[in-house]
Image (cartoon, rainbow, N blue to C red; front, top):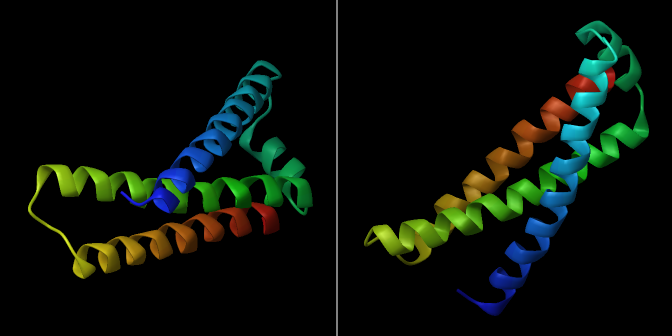
Length: 109
């Protein structure tokens, strides 16, 4: 793996660790507070902080996951070269599109 991919995966791992911790703490707070799905959506609707936080989360996932999957596929299969990189680039774009659709759906709900 190139140094750039190594650094990108390690950096996004740090971002994801922080984001997952905040996400889980928020879920625990909401559940213990007795918030319903409607309550949560009313709080996230139009909240730019929410959109930015989860937007960063989506970008980190879209970078981190394909790099890890690339390493796994290269280790466990004979798949190498440009076709692997293109497929994982498309996978990254798919993660971005689906992730931002989810963020937008909750932000505008």
